[in-house]
Amino acid sequence: AIELDENYFKALERRARLNKTLEHLDDSLKDYEKLLEMKPKHYEYMANVQELKERIRVRNEEMKQKMIDSLKQLGNVFLKPFGLSTDNFNMVPNENGGYSVQMRG
Image (cartoon, rainbow, N blue to C red):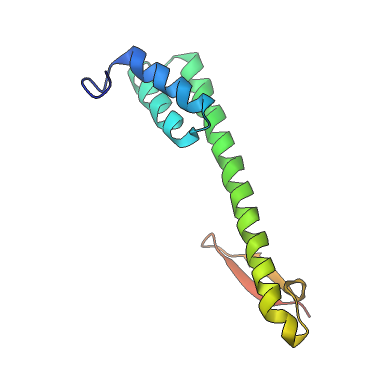
């Protein structure tokens, strides 16, 4: 139904709920934002948009931490022959949203 009419309200609402239930957070957020454009003062849609943004932020932080942990494990494999480990280094966030690696003194 959405393919025939992208503004089909009920189908969009159902898809948003289903995506949220299935943990397809990004897709659900897009649908709720579209619903909010159609009904700007709808409390349920506003609440869902806020909740989904927070859940996406938390998910992304967890993914980032897992990635850093995996990189540390890989780094330890290469540093071990030199008597070093990733514990000898600090990862410092920079202003561009990335990280720089500095050796601990």
